[in-house]
Image (cartoon, rainbow, N blue to C red; front, side):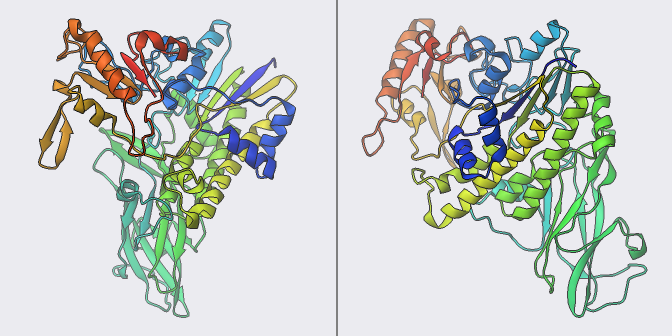
Length: 528
């Protein structure tokens, strides 16, 4: 068969937490892997965020070479605010050679699973899904949703955006117009729910029917029509339905997707009801070549990403549902990986798995006493959630370890770690006070007018709005060095109310090569 390599990318995996949970015994597979091979911290590229560092991992190049120095890229000839953020993980922006392109030159095939680098750049690469954006899914037909008749509460930060998009309120009333209803006590209740695609106006309708015995509601039947003899499934609390196929019309095209439900909660009086509906993914065409995904669905069942995680954080599903959905995804990935590598005689496999990043952004601040959100009453819950997330990552690693033989390598990598926020400091205000950023007063507050600003701030990069470089620029070339000097002076002078410096360093672009940053796509001033 020849030598093979599996590269498992765990977004934001912290070496400290991996070692801690491995030592504790929660992550036995990590522990075993460390003993079998090696373990080391990694130095991320600046800024230590997702697009720059997955591109660095995929190419072996610093941002100065591959061109991704922000979440996207600023190109000369465009307005300074344009940065192609939706393409940050795309092959369209990367200027360096990917590992799999080099492998293809040697005649080697690669499987990329929810990884960067789409659209395809080589005929010897199989893409399954695409890591497009954290919390967004390129091929998704409909987002995961919780149907509930009450407003659940999250133990951590409220997530109004997630609740708005992923909770659908249901109201039950006495069942009317049903055929073949069973007799029972209490009276059956009904509600109507819809599965709405992310784009397109046509939704799929289902009818819910609550049934009971001895004066208590005990089951929820799901049906396409009001006929109990033709229901799809009748669920008890804690039960999953099988997968159902539905056809959606999106952009005038018919797309077949898969749906399954879990009755998360049903109180005896029906006052509390929660029904989870999984993310809807297509049954084919979420891969390249397109037919590969259909082949995988036929063999291993429907595919889902980690979308349930955001519902769990918002309190829309319980812990058990979160774990069950992710364990389904983990098993699917492992089975599909082994199958594709063997059937297509591939040498290299890359996976990106985003759970730990989402997890730590949400709860790390509650667990770490140095974090600004630390709350002793929530710390125990936060640590439990972190540990569960790393145990799921450990299950993923354990599955890949079973694919190993004497000719196969397993590499687990991370793009960056995570640390809780302690304080906030407005860089924009500091630059505005120097006249470098133009602030205007609006009805709803103050707003930056970038068209009249001398600089544009993008995370750890400051770009000078040169007339000679950007469309609509306002700074002459003769002012360039003076503007940069003012920016650096402003950044190096930033102190919080306690007198602590907010900026560790501020460098001119040409001085930033020592941290891997150079070239026209890097800011004129780089800071952190």
